[in-house]
Length: 527
Image (cartoon, rainbow, N blue to C red; front, side, top):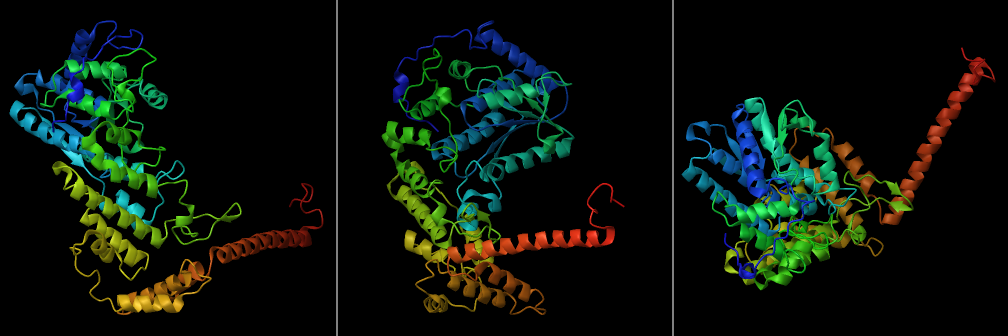
């Protein structure tokens, strides 16, 4: 993919700061040559396959470029060991970066074939059950936050770890090559330094116990941001990409549209630009996407995505959109109220509607190359539909209706349950009958709906064992007209349980006193 490079016509000033650069002692050319020789020695030292993590950002690009160059300089008969390049697509990445990475992987595959390189690119995606929209809209998980960061492991760690573990299982061991650098952040520096000394020169043990047979190689761990950029713009990209286009992406993602390669300490570097999921709520705002929209008219089509994230995924204002019951329907007292759990049905439906609207708007008004942008896939829609109907008992099956109303197109899947006996019009009648001015969240309707769905599920069963337990669980969590009534119930329940514990403790003391005497609790009276 080629990006507009209008701003690239400017001359880029390079002013080296000796104290920050890994090139200050030997210069960039000799430093890189030493790293290439070191990498070649490591590559030829055993038969352990390599796995390179590639995100499309500057650090992983520089690392892969260095590895590729080192192996390409070897004789053809020595390029035998497989080098797997893995890129995990969370499916909610910044679309510009996601397209860049996707095209990069295709370019790598072609270049590896032409050059006779043992490089094998892989695009990894989360399992359907782990995907962002399935958990947020389907299960109703509230948007990730520091105390409930459910996204990272599901979207990024699990797919890559599974791939790496499979490689290690097949070959006994694996070497993971990362673009981590000590200068990136204090936390990453500490991790690198913790594994700096190992029994194998140049390699460190992986800190993840699940990857105990995986070694780690970090060839650019001492480089600064500016070293990375200097290397990328002065050395040719071996799989045919123009690294200056990558620089243009970073420049476009900074607020002032400036991106010096090497600067003094008073000037921000392009390295400060961070790319990630456009829905990320672990930061206040997605500054990189906002800067792209501001700096380039051709990228203003991303505005609906940015607005969706800012308006509908605000973790500071979502308390009222969440059920007063936890995910398992339990009631947990927190301070002077109940600890809220997943998003309510009404808000989950709203999220789906607004997301589909954003997707439709991009498809109709965006430039040609993003008209087919898919924010949520049919596969994810079907899993969300299953969760709503089967696990949340929302038997009205509202997803196809929302899809039709939002897109104007017929939902491409057939009826969810051919054996469904409760028709949509029946559900509407039930909702009207169960309505009450005191029940603003339709809790009574939801309870009756759940009981009907449980009964329906057991209708054709040869044995109805478990149906009464299912009824009891539904009644325990749903027999309320309001959150206040549920809170009063939970408070009384907890007080009864505390009283029972105290009574049990008192009965035990009385029993011991009766057996051993009044001083039974003293050391002298101990049997």
